[in-house]
Length: 604
Image (cartoon, rainbow, N blue to C red):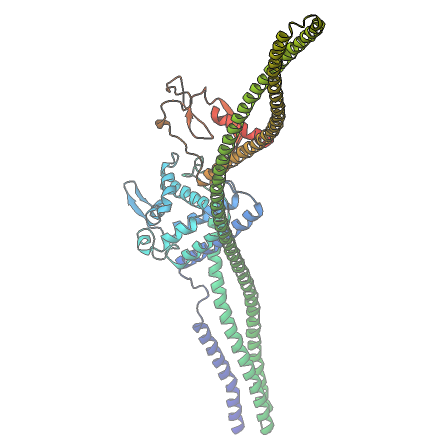
């Protein structure tokens, strides 16, 4: 009886263990959350919209960078991006009551951006002025395209989502624009600033525009919501299977321990009958078979859960890679911003250098003006010296002419004197011969002859005085000749000096013209740097600047593209290329002559 009672007690222990394990499994099932439990539908929609926004923005940036040129309205990734943005902005939008009924309008919150950010007033006014837009949805679509072209879409939406008090009038509390997902989407939109888009808003029918991928996007959103629900259920099932696996391992260890314990008891109590042993073995085999089936089922569920977990981990890896790519895009964007800041700093340095060059050119222009004044003073002094030299040359020429006339008169007098002297000498010789002949005959006339000789001697003395005077005058004439030759040498020297000074004056004139042209070029460059020439208004001119004729219907006004003044057609019918315009443009006669002279001087 003791043995039988003991066998009954032993045989009842496995059933107790089975019952305990079964109750524990039921407790585990009851403690596990239900596999088909649903999450908040608005949160799932926000998550789906965030994922769609990430995918569309990433695909648009990658395709645009590989595309390598400006995007247009027919670009498929750009159309998909606008569809996703429209869904994000429509999510949780409140229904507004109007005269025509109840409707949801995207244009209301987007129109509020104009009040929060004055820079958005330009595109809002452009959207209102578009003639083809009749519905608020069309205006909202046009506003999104213009903001993307301005590269200010992220800035405008950031200003909008910071005002929660204004968004509460248009959106529900659980919408994308109110929750944190809206800030994430706005942060992703910053990456679109690297894209250049040229969208023709005027010719598109934005009121009835339906993208070809609209239904596909809706199906994708639904599939993503279902996938998220399935992923949540799979994670719950995974936790349950892991708990069940741990329980099965514990039960298996418990049965091994019980088997060892029973074997020990059998060895200790050799008085147990064979019938009790068979009963115990059958009970053990049945319980072991049930546990094996449960274990196999748990192993099968574990393999399925491991496969699902692997899929979830792969999806997580994909999401992590997408996040890394987004981080890389943000880093590239930050690098681009830093490069633009560096270029901006370089441009500022270049502007400072240009200002320094402008100041240096202004100082050079002042020094050139001072040099030009000194050269003008030198030219005036040289002109005065040339005038004095010409006056002295005229005086010397007059004196030379007077000396030549005196010389000619002196030479004529000397010739006449020589002829008279020769004639008188011949006559005297004849008279002496006659008187010598008559001296013998006319002794009585000796006194008379002596008196006559005395008179002749007096005449001879007078003639000698005249000859002496003539010789002195001849010496004076020789001195005048030497002075004339000296004056001729001085005249030739002065002519050489005058020619050299004329050459120097010509060189100075050439340099002066070149310096004037350079000064005019510097002035034109300075004018171009300071804002260009003064463009005279049409109302300020009533007469032609050159011919002073009054303008009328037949005599039209024309601007000179060089000086900015207003002339008639007759005074401005010339065309020349200018530094600001390589094509020939209208210039006045004065500027035409000045530009031609400048071109000829530059060519020489």
